[in-house]
Amino acid sequence: MIPAAIEKLERKIGYEFQDKSTLVQAVTHRSYSSHNNERLEFLGDGILNFIVAEALYAQFSTATEGQLSRLRALMVKQKTLASIAREMELSDFLVMGAGELKSGGFNRDSILSDALEAIVAAVYGEAGFEVTRNLLLSWFADRLSVLSLDQVLKDAKSRLQEHLQSRKEDLPDYKVLVTEGEAHAQTFTVQLSFRTLEDDVTGKGSSRRIAEQNAAEAALIAIGVDLPHE
Image 1 (cartoon, rainbow, N blue to C red):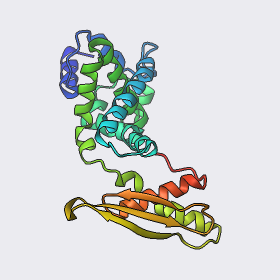
Image 2 (cartoon, one colour):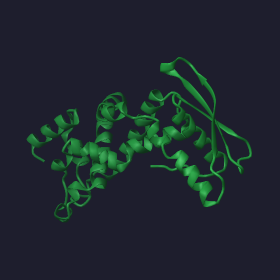
Image 3 (cartoon, rainbow, N blue to C red):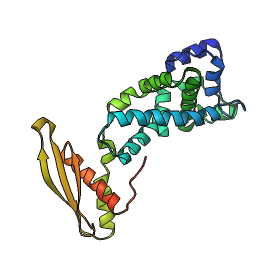
Image 4 (cartoon, rainbow, N blue to C red):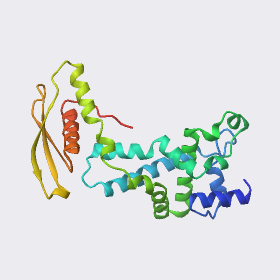
């Protein structure tokens, strides 16, 4: 890769490497050379998952473990990482074998996401954890700012309803037990019951809808139905 291309890629990433060869390795696909980005991608995946988990833990102080896991899955899934890579125009800098280039590998989600994870590891190896964390949070800033629990709660009621209907059971009953707080900052507590649920469950939320979704999620857990993951 020529120096001008490396410099342009560094601007896209937001980090200037002291050792340019590490960056070149991070964008080198296995189809081109045995000195490729596979090992870096392995390490970058772990670093990325931790930093995103840490950010979500701080951002969503009331979220359950399951909700945090699904939010993280949403943030670090292949499609999301490939989207970030495309925003950086990373496909323009991938080093690949002729066969992969002809087959359109430079625009494949799996290859783009792997290269992005490899870049994470390359930055970490040279600059350490704090620099890597700050860089990653800048990459994810827009997505984290619009993320909400609704995105992982929205299917719980539907999933519970489908489960009960598949067993020809009556639909669940949702009842608001308590509404607390001022009009602009209310908390709702909803009780959920149905015939085969041994003990009623409750859910809380800043709206009735979210409270019902939380109750439905609790019910799914109570009856042993696996919750969906991204």
